[in-house]
Length: 380
Image (cartoon, one colour):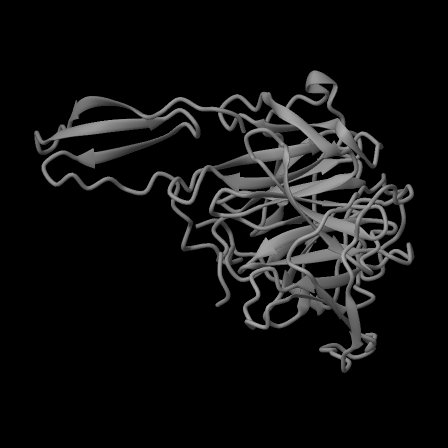
């Protein structure tokens, strides 16, 4: 168990990265817009929530841009892999034969008793963290303060300012299965931060500018529904909103931290989110933005859902949690974010992927969002 960290201050709202550029050649599906009753869980929160019915399919374009430094109100300051190999071993205390299996995808080593055939899980979720991985979305402010958004309660909690040896201007973030936030700073450096103690910051050894890739949207994605081991997937943030194969889609080898090119992406201004069952998604502007599922092995677009009314503005991020997506956007470019929810899995069974602003004027501008693949895949 890592040291306990006291959660401080409960707020509302969140967003990530910056938007720019115009909309070219998009084909947005028709929508019907209704006005919802206000939803607010914090004194002083804006009460003008809106709801938009989004069709289950469609095509569109998207992008985002680089965030400029600004103050945030409320802030205190994988490619192909080799299969497992097995070698015999002997338990020195019992003399029982064992087999040691090494998964070269993750460098995890597990030992099974050959008399029972029981193999421990290769990449288990920790069950002793004082900051749980399975109840919310971790979000990062532009000024390097780590927060947590709790979808069930529709509120924010501040975990604290990150204490790293890098100037506190952040760009993106992913969260792994072990409870570490991998933070990319604006100067391209990546640091690994313990979510239970945000002053615990280390250099994992990632070398910037591999293959010319500068800043990038990032997320941890599991290998598959059966293989829960995860790795970073990234989309190069190159300033070009959209176009056929205009950006690079890649993974980061979990053993060497080498960047592994997987293919081309049609979006150069995008954030990335992953799921515990091995799927990868992009959230790309400009305005309105799109939700895009991509082939994790090639970066090719699988499907696109237009997000009418969702403007990325001065910064944006998103994450998958419990069957749905949550988008954090600074539409007004005022240093605070809105939170928009899409009922991606149609859990209310009304035949629509309803899109709704659930919070406005968050206490920070979100530039990174991350959910561990230990988080639930379906509504709880």
